[in-house]
Length: 70
Figure 1 (cartoon, helix red, strand yellow):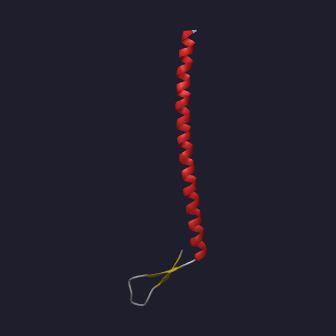
Figure 2: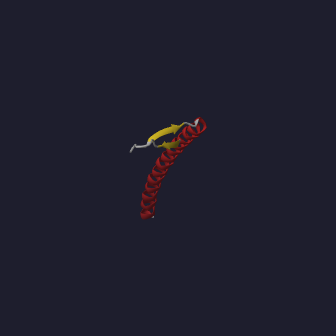
């Protein structure tokens, strides 16, 4: 989105006219969609990592118990 500024004589205010670019708007929507998909994938990966860390901790406790018996 580009801004076009114009000032009228004896005016203290700037008028902003937005120039619409449908290709750019479509690109922005596509990028937002991809970022959203990536964020959901990242959150899923983080959850999987937490689950794996918990399982590894359980296995470590079990292994220590087995070794203490031997």
